[in-house]
Image 1: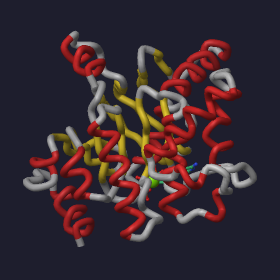
Image 2 (image 1 turned 120 degrees about the vertical axis):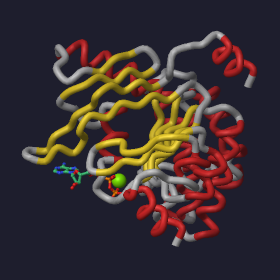
Image 3 (image 1 turned 135 degrees about the vertical axis):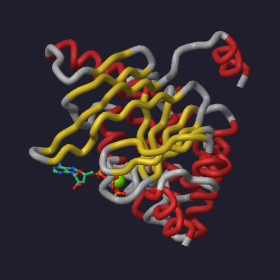
Length: 261
Ligand SMILES: Nc1ncnc2c1ncn2[C@@H]1O[C@H](COP(=O)(O)OP(=O)(O)OP(=O)(O)O)[C@@H](O)[C@H]1O
Ligand SMILES: [Mg+2]
């Protein structure tokens, strides 16, 4: 993308900048000071053992969860722990307008068709004229290989197809960045391949992505940076060839031994 190239050349600030993020659930400190940046056009992958705070971290980034200390800046909008209500509401609207989210369990609206799922937010949140939203939705469905399924309901689609609809739905809002939380964990190997192939294409096209995944081959190929979360901290970060092939931390080595199987 030339737009991405020129943004890089201009040395623009990161799309996501997180500084010293802390999150507690009662006594349990789930995030213990996360500092992390994602640059425009980069793919960052988060790995690490269960319970390490990966999902909590993603939820804090788009305001699905509040946090206790630190600062999150996304596309120039800052979220802080204690914000005045109207300021917080405005910041959350801003952030959510620029951040897409794809979950393990798809979260499509079951009573709507595939096309209706995709145009819902563009029409009702972004106020895109309905005809324009539908035209764009069809283009996105083609891009994820599902042009023929526009009028179906999600329930009759395979898991892999539903996840590709969820990706198209996220793309429909023209996000600055898409956060993926284990997008292939509930899928069989063939469906996993279909979804990862769409994600690899998006990475190649320059979409900024932050992906929690156990799909190591995808991480190795698509990621610019890999971050290892363990007990609420980033214990290791670096390019995939270092973190995945020559890990420094014992936690990373143990996680990888299990993840590669
Ligand atoms: N609403 C909550 N109330 C209390 N504890 C919570 C809550 N949500 C998450 N936790 C705890 O926070 C910790 C981190 O959870 P989180 O789901 O972020 O981990 P994760 O790294 O995504 O794990 P997994 O790989 O299993 O998805 C866990 O110990 C979890 O039990
Ligand atoms: Mg999780």
